[in-house]
Length: 188
Image 1: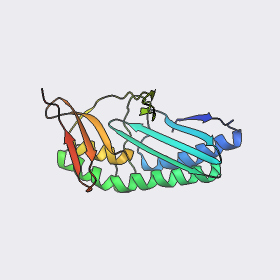
Image 2: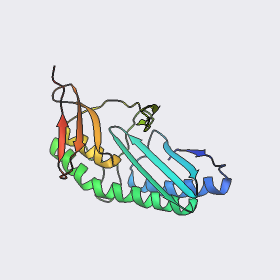
Image 3: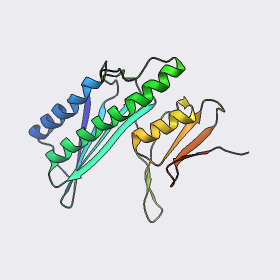
Image 4: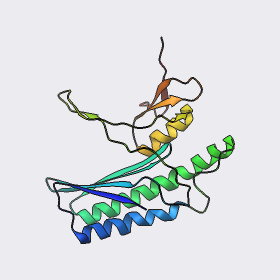
């Protein structure tokens, strides 16, 4: 598994690099083949918080987790546990959906998965004063609204923009306050 390690406001020591590679490398057991795209790991320090962000890109799927604690090594352990929970939580859902569609399953029943390629991503966010401080670019893979909901859940986001395979238009799915989901379709 290729790992791109980046430090913000932090010098990455060899010991820290080895620890990250060992812990993130444990996730490789869930996949048939190692991911083609590198796993993005960002370590940062804000005040007394050590923050670890991990993004694992695959074709149509991004698994992302972030954890913070007073100790960098503890943050790394927590983020790996969170990623493992996400993979286990969604493997049954994804396998069922792919089996129904006659597509090769993404996650095998014994906990391994097939990794597919996806283009690199950058995050987007708006600052409170309305400035755009980050831009996110990603490949639009045509998918159904149900697949978009699964992807949104994997990312842990409240909305997801996607290319609807049925209408060939850009749509947005979002999580409603009542726990259900909404779909936004353009009207011309």
